[in-house]
Image (cartoon, rainbow, N blue to C red; front, side):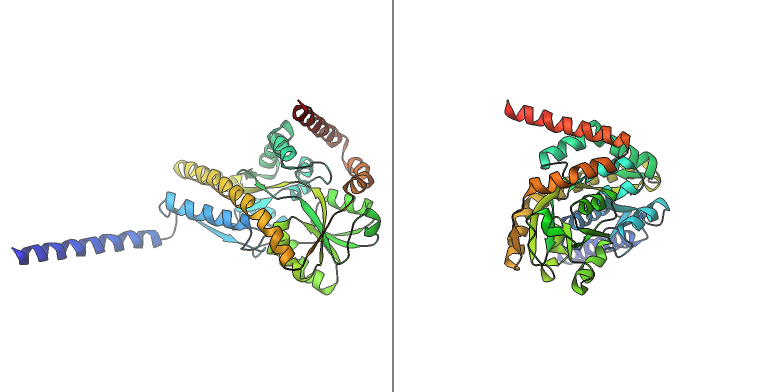
Length: 339
């Protein structure tokens, strides 16, 4: 009886091992859908961590049928080129926002300088008619499907001399993303804005090709700008967000059951990133101070007053109407707060 029991157990273990190896082999087979994401941030940034979480969720929920490879630091392409590659069907996913202004005018409102004051204004704009139009035109005009949004945090100016007032900007060469409203704003403030891919910024600061750049705390930290910049001037000139997007053609090519899995996993990714953002934002500021960066308070009203008219004038008549709608939205928010 004992020998029979041992043989039976041994046979069961063999069957179990065989079954496990078959399952593992099955998961190692070529996935049914192989997606590639290319983003501008480094592998320590919350956007990258969120997309990696998304990748793992897709793999688990689809039992290996969907594979998503995430490439950080513009390894696949610069941001604008990534959009073109998605539209051409070469890659599938990226993060973008105001850069889409090169295709659709309304995208300027994702990061219009000195327009939004805080995350409350931002969330109202995203949910408003204006926000819905941005998402609709992204889909219809550029062929990109937004999967929700990641909060960027306010953008601040970094430099190697303190900047407290627009007068301190005279002649300062500042890297900006390839967004028309950014060029307009910094030119009106007296600086020399230079559009440049994000992956080129650190080396350009190091070599002195540019003297300053502007970004949220998280990007300042993840890019290592503390090594080449001394001051963070708290301009808060942009409060904005970014969309993780997939090409609409790529999404529609998914089988129906995988579309459902994909969208559910995307919702979870958005929540995951938001939690990371809130947790990390204050920690990152302390880390930047520990790395030797000094935080400089600035005259925000002076900055806003000097360039707001130039920004408004740079908009088309139709976008000027949208601008007025956003201003009205802000007034309504203030009225509700006062009650």
